[in-house]
Length: 471
Image (cartoon, rainbow, N blue to C red; front, side):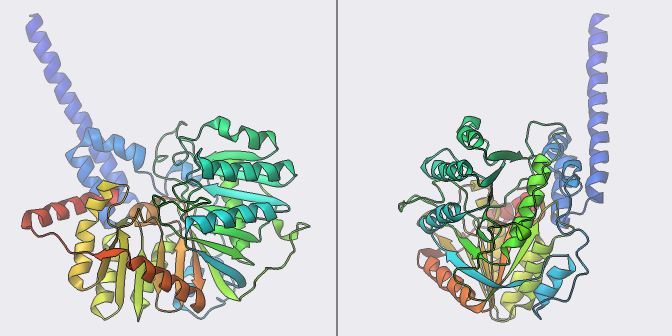
């Protein structure tokens, strides 16, 4: 009798477990379909949930949140109510499109400096910190307890002790390994530090995905360094290091920095609840730019705190409008199907499409996932270059001779649709020429991509492509 009951128990348990898995799969399928995701991302999540419900459902709960996440919805949209402002300052389709999302207009009269190395960026960041009179606002994905990270922390601590208002915002995932006691001197000197969307907090849903990937160092609301460089020796440092990753940043001084300051205040209020004062009327910050050169700069944020996807939509539009060239530098190239198709069509109509990526990145999975995409570009006639000397972490896009885009966003679905990102649109021919020359110098350290032959390999690449939007 016991044996019969045991068998019945296992049979009923198996049936109930199967029915529960099926029910969970159906519920989450319906929920995924309702979300505003790209078709490729929707298909990838549906496949995972249907084929492996006991794995797919927990993965979706932990990693699947996007703009509908309850936690993300608690952050006030940075461009709320701004979509109907005055006419754009530039008669350009891209600027007009961005303005339709409420993105502030491109500001003229900015001094812009392209920081091509980690050594240049390190020196410029320390100079910016040293020159601050009233406030220092810093946000970064990674702050490490190494010589470069400690140097930045020590500089911030000195300014806090001098009475400068120092606010340091760290992403909880990116700066996970930073010991809290490393921040103690800064806090003791009067500075403040906070972690963006801590992982160990209920509810967990979406917290692993919705990361603050923005990198900003802002002094007095008038000077800033932005781009892709984290505050660690792998990116920045006083002395050259052949192992240091190749990255790119921009130093900006002038009216556009107010938009970066506005973005920081929004992030800081979400993380801490503290509403920082608007610096435009603050005493002591009215010094003019040191080297005004008239560059027009537009600050474009993206992420769960932005209605729509202005960064992605504008890049896509710019690819369609490009007439001479589209040069892309990115560490990870796992875009959505529409963006790849736009690049293929641009290549076929005669636009010089160039993609520069690392030969091997620090994420082997994304290297394999990118193969189907770069093979498609190669077959269309685009030039794909593999950077060999070290890890390439820079993010830049050059359109024709008039616009360079530099920021924190990678050319992948995570940066385009999930993370909190920011980019600077430089509507300035001299700066675009600087970026073009920098890309040419990168090309000197590259080899030309050639796809590896084999029908089975190509089939495997296309299978992986189905799940690439989840990376």
